[in-house]
Length: 196
Ligand SMILES: [Zn+2]
Image (cartoon, rainbow, N blue to C red; front, side, top):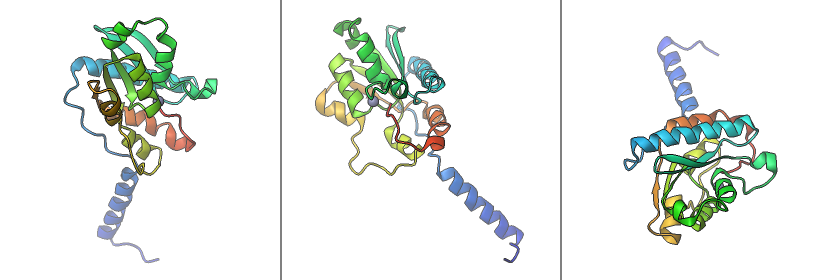
């Protein structure tokens, strides 16, 4: 093979770098409806996602907040429990709904590190939570784990628009931080993922 001229060499390196970067999606802009308080609690949701990893779980975390106070927290523990319902959001609701009344759920915000799946949307709906803030979008998550886009994607805001109109769904928020957590975890495994 002939040696590349410097200009061609630089161009080749640029293309290789661009292709490598393309494997990691650029983060989306924050939802303009989110507040500084939302950012503070989303940082905690990402901490809970890291806690999940430290306990052998998938990197998803969620917390319930009312009037600035954290009422409940949960980190994904699907793998450790072999319980497919132990996603961060459904796990939290299952653990705390016997202790938290519906009026409190309705007045709270659920923060979750990743967009809730359809199972978790159902749990959130039945708990009566009216405000949800998520970190990373499902679309971006699928890119990180190397899966093609869903042929008929059903985003969480669409699920709520159809099943529980009036529920406020905000996100993405601080997606760069959330994607970095997923990028450090899923590409190494390339297994069937737990979802949020
Ligand atoms: Zn879920």
